[in-house]
Length: 268
Image (tube, rainbow, N blue to C red):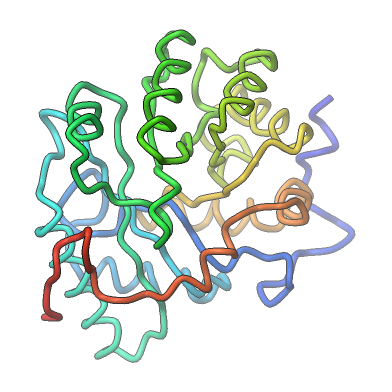
């Protein structure tokens, strides 16, 4: 079932300037010294240069927000984003940046949601909220989470659902979540089995069912770049990019300094 779909394409390679190619990455950890991503701005800049070579025009930065681990303020995140923008401009690297976050579905997140605190979304319309569930979460918990997020006015986007064991071969649950307005963001490297064979197979299932709304790099280190380049010349990548992905719709969002409801900060 999986042997031909995920073989590297020997017919055509999706050119970086193709109208179907991804121009916007919606998942990365390249704000330095914050979560489990890069350590400094030099590494950030070097990664952005490589993203540019791969055809990306805009990066939506998504640092982890997780109780007890990653609870830095929006002001700190915004300041780091503005500093990276400044350094990229000074280095002559033409890349648009926006700030979002990858929220872990924990008590801290739901407290923010219930208190109507400002949350960092993938888009300027404050709709798409990138969330991460425990790989072994119960289906009932996730269904309840979707309802609470949509009731708050957001559209939940589940990051790397292919790595969630509770979704393996569970097309019924996948469809139920989608019916409740949850969207799915698959990691590009899953297309070549970078995380596991199971993740690769679930990614295929989602693609074959045309249930993928966003693709993302989930990049946090240089070691991932070689695999990204390989994944981006597979038939699977070509196929999903020809579907109705929402990545490139975010390109028209203005990449401006953080503003209300996010804290206003000045460029470094």
